[in-house]
Length: 248
Image (tube, rainbow, N blue to C red):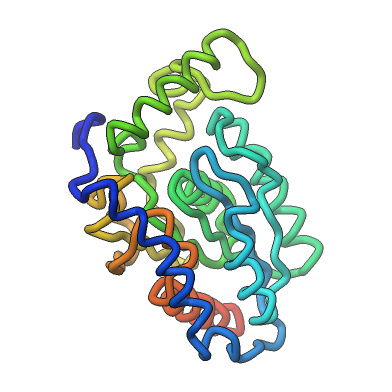
């Protein structure tokens, strides 16, 4: 798939976010979700140009479900992928050691790609992985508007502004291991599900089809995946299956 591949859906489709959030909030089953005893910890990773605040609705639902929920610590997801993954690895290991249980990782867009690499690196500390509209096959298979933003951030990174990725991250040595592990298989003991939407106007949905995990399609905007009822049903199923595997 070409790095220049663009999302096929029209960009105005992302205006569905408000309706998707309203539909979620109006769903009684979301509010009355059954609390699980001894629920595993969850780490949430936001998408490109977003921060932990973008996943506040999902975080609240997971807590009602009984999960200890940790955030990535990012205000804006624009740093070098390798630097972020190193920090996320430390968070996952610390969370797993404190709770005595492996961690479920949920990442949106670029956050899912980062979470996937952490799952590859820390199979003993990760129980499940859910990627939401994450371009794991080609990180630049995005809409032209987004690609221009990526290029702008990379140029600032080339100027050595701290906390930003640079053009070197695409082909250079700094992220060579990250790029290889993004395509590597996830351990058999990790329940791995990649969620995609053909009407995603930000990321080419084909880039989200992880060949080493289950592929689940929903009818959602890209930004709305973190507040979509069908996505919550997918996450609910993944976490239940992962929990059963942990119980043996």
